[in-house]
Length: 161
Image (cartoon, rainbow, N blue to C red; front, side):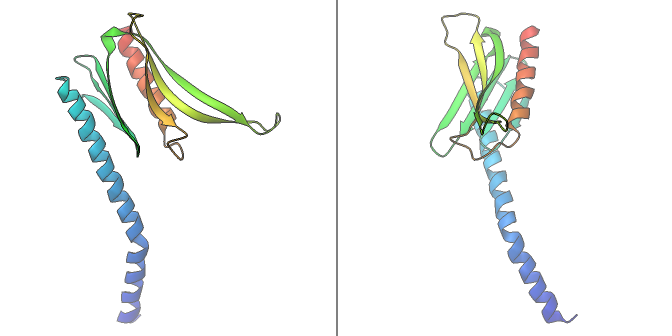
């Protein structure tokens, strides 16, 4: 091979890789912003995040010492920051809103929303739902089912103790 072929090959590889590099750096930047946001919310409540999860659109974190849960979601239209004192919570459950499509034999269930729903010990307080996924805001799911199940288990384990 001559030097010209190597240079042309390297240029084509670089051109092919650039979109992936930009996508990866954009994702890392977004993750960093979500992490900073969840840490800032916790800091405003004099808490420190000891366990956290960052997804494409949201971040969730827990201060295990003070039993406080924090949630931050950023979409193109709005930002949502929520704080839940787990000492005031009676129950936590996953709410999956779905609809069926197709005929009776080939029916397929599609998920419209995934919420982590909290009910308070004091019935005067309205229930809180943390929206992990909404099909109207997101194009597709990226592990939200596994994440919401994991956090439901974490919270319910804390509520039992």
